[in-house]
Length: 495
Picture 1 (cartoon, rainbow, N blue to C red):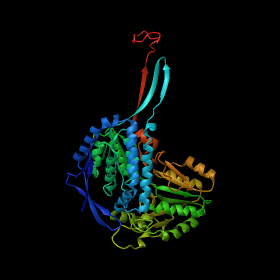
Picture 2: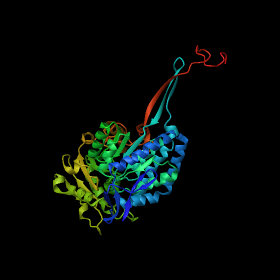
Picture 3: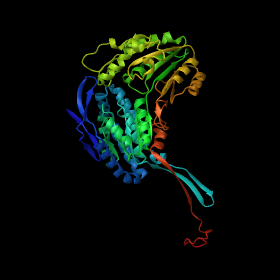
Picture 4: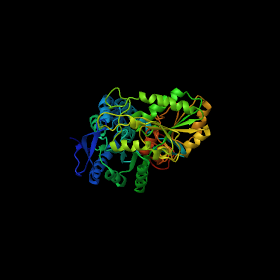
């Protein structure tokens, strides 16, 4: 069986902890590999390698760093299919989704290629007689990223692209459920000419995570995952003196006003609710139907569900693949039980759809008349279960969204520009879509939510990412004019 190892210093390193975890093909249910799970000592070895590499990497010119980033960008581009196939084989998402993930991640590498511009500081001349003040941005040192199973390529690229460009050394702890893409990234960085120790991959579970959070040589930690773990990462990391950005869970709402194009809204709800089997932190989980649009919208979504082709991710006809594990599939299905529904009506029950083999499949489900206070509304389901909440007015919809403890992303569908502008002004969420169901910012902005969807002050990638992986230094300097100075500087007085 395939063994997935670590990447420390300048190559693959087999684990020494004696612990391993299983890696499955979700489409078949078969175990395809084992992944080494690191001990604290193995994490320490990666941190030591990174610390040793940092002085030389920090001193590397911006143009030389940019050249390596451009080479890495071209290598990732030429290996799109290879990366996507690894994602599909271990996560289960369909190949088109996997390719889209690689493309969005690659945008972040391209943004980081402009690091000579991104790290420019400011300069104020003659703030006082013969005194200038200027600011510079310098790297932190060794930093780490802890990434989730649902985007094993894109989220690491959110993090390591900027960190490495800024002059930091980066340790990646990917999800143990689908770690192979991270090892391919390590090989591509090596091929691009990145010095040994600047990028490491340490596979592991809780033991590796806790060691990252406690390690005195790791200056900053980036995390994407569930809210309870994000809170743990933030509290533990900051308690140990680290800079931390921890992106948590989500319960993304899509508000549909009575004047909306119902067909467009229904198409968007199906794509955003069931794409990648709902295993996206920006997936639409709750459709908020305002006024008399509800019946028409529920009918339109229900009509579209039978057309969603579910099957193995490597089948080009598949539009939705399996969930990542059997346990997760069963947990998601439990939200269709009476106890979780609290009186809501199951319009389409994905459990009724049968599939061949032992893959971790679940059909797309639609639940109508969902109310706050029920499990199906309150929890982050992270699967293909779409809820419809009925409200009477626009004000009720905004109140519902703002009362949610999460504030990752939200969307509104309407033909009224005034209503859309009012919504983006009033709603409490970090990312807002207007007739766009999944409002993920482009790479030259930044990604992050509000409330329980983000712990820390800094969003991910883009300008916020550059700020996170550097710290500002302000220099105040005086250089006396030799023609007026009383100090003998060795210059002719009239020069």
